[in-house]
Image (cartoon, rainbow, N blue to C red; front, side, top):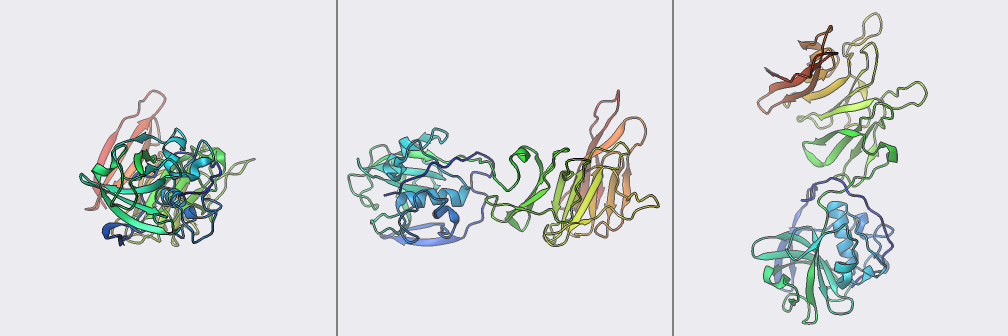
Length: 393
């Protein structure tokens, strides 16, 4: 019950296999069987051409293959790929999906369940599994070309060769097996391919798990900052206000830390650094519009134009109760604190300026507003030494 696929490549990467996405709970009734499961958003681009290779009969016609492919994309961002163009036969997905998708007989959430009748067969999406039942969603069950809803079926009906009589399919449909979707996938965004592998700064909005910030940390070709509002499926570049550096090839400084204020998700802080022989390679920005624009937050400058925050910024931590109270861990300078959103800074731990240099790599504020700092020293003959100093926000 499918459509003719075009071969679409995909790359693995990480969102978590449970989906990472918030979903509404909906109650669906089909043929007397009631299932509680997230309701699919059929407006998602994963259900439609040109992304979905099985969308060939129009917006209102959903074959089982079109729906299953789209559901995998909607929940996990996975683009299912096939060895040949016969993926329109749902019953052949077990053998035709490419080898990078694992297969098996054990039911597992976020997998494809496949039945064969010797012809087209049928494929459904597994939403959840417990000790007794498997809950699936599917389309075109009655050949109407419509979304058929959710259905809960006993685990015993998912043995190889078992039929689904009484659960929506006739006796000629025999269960084949499950194709498991990868728990990790590679996130693809508008950044150049050379920026892949340069991201080390990431932050999620504590009020919206689908809203994520990602920072490129390469010291020679930093690509800046990107934001997603749909759990990593799509990304937008948000570099307005960030300074580009470099003598010949301009690039953004290496982003090392991003922090969203827990008490006001519109306020975001960004720390960055760049090599500088004078130790002035620190960059610190504040956004009050969720990352749309950034303002310098290094504090006032002295007579020589040097701001209070000078060294590369390793870590940024925002007070959970006050978005204007922030701690930053710096290279050499130590740990600094602001209570006015970065307009002014004061040292709370001073770093050494001679001999082995101090580097404060991690600053964290706990739920009770305890502040923890970890770092070490590095010098020509001095090893890295870890330290932990508690304080109070």
